[in-house]
Image (cartoon, rainbow over all chains, first blue to last red; front, side, top):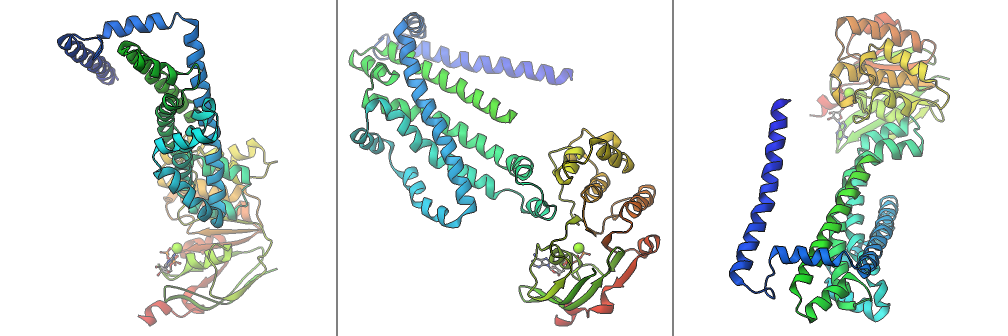
Length: 249
Length: 202
Ligand SMILES: Nc1ncnc2c1ncn2[C@@H]1O[C@H](COP(=O)(O)OP(=O)(O)OP(=O)(O)O)[C@@H](O)[C@H]1O
Ligand SMILES: [Mg+2]
């Protein structure tokens, strides 16, 4: 017991140290370059961030982007799960979906973003892009989880005439859960990257992507860094939250 | 109605396991089947349950009947506790008290909250037997149900099964003459009704 506590403590210290280490490297390089345009100092970025969060417009911007990406994520997550369930039960649906899934997997995101801009309003762009990112990953994972389900247990349930609900709850769910969590958290992070990239190209009003673009126009590297940190922070906390909630189910 | 197996034939990738197999399973009795390892007992049971389709032959008297089974390899929900495992197959109106009592009778009262994966081999076996007992079935099939139990529990569990399933149609696969005698059921020995095909074909 005591041993594991000291080991945990050592781990935390080591982790904090690893962050500190890279922060120092950053500071040293920035100091050496001495040019805020190329690489701003950590302190400058923190100052910018603190300034940003005092503005009302900041929250509108973050919320705009956040809601769209999350909306896109959840809708696609659910659709992907449903499609995988259909595919698992009906062979022809699986064969039918196969080209679509391979296509969405292989197409470069930039092509999809530009093509989508031709079709729909830029404000809804990231919702649509999330779809492209989430669908193939979650669909493939969910299908793998379903196929991974112990056939011996399913046979057992069949012989005992276990109800559909209990089969899902006690046999399918434990088997697909790790796959759903992996697929979800993987595509969640990717959703943010792709969604922001789409915004930088499509420039919907009051979005993080637009803010990044503006920072680029004005060569405001500190702003760029501040926004980037924010995106990483939101995306990572949401991923943690997602995993925590999914594990409770 | 008795269960009648008529001319059941089954082979796996060209290897004949059952050849014109005939057997009458008597209603409301303990029916024992004995035979050496690898001869086809589990295959026969899988055919009875409908998990494996025979190549040819007929089975009468089993359609529409509710089955309960102890599988050779348990097939329990390893990530859930014993109570959940029993509830999985129990009818809605089975009381919690009934489940607890049965688990106590099986000597599992100290493990109610444990995951099955944390139980010993013998405990899992008893739980698998418990699951077959709690399901309300017309026909109960058991594939070497008592094999992993040692002396004390062995006799206790046999007594419990005998008591609970009296008057039901029960099929038990076993290697033990002793079990047949305790139950006083009807015994068939594989080679009396079926040539040892697989050796002959080699
Ligand atoms: N799914 C399968 N595919 C191919 N061969 C199989 C399969 N299941 C069983 N067999 C073969 O059929 C034969 C009978 O197997 P079975 O499991 O029915 O024997 P058993 O009498 O139950 O043996 P034991 O007493 O060891 O449990 C064996 O030779 C086995 O290799
Ligand atoms: Mg067997």
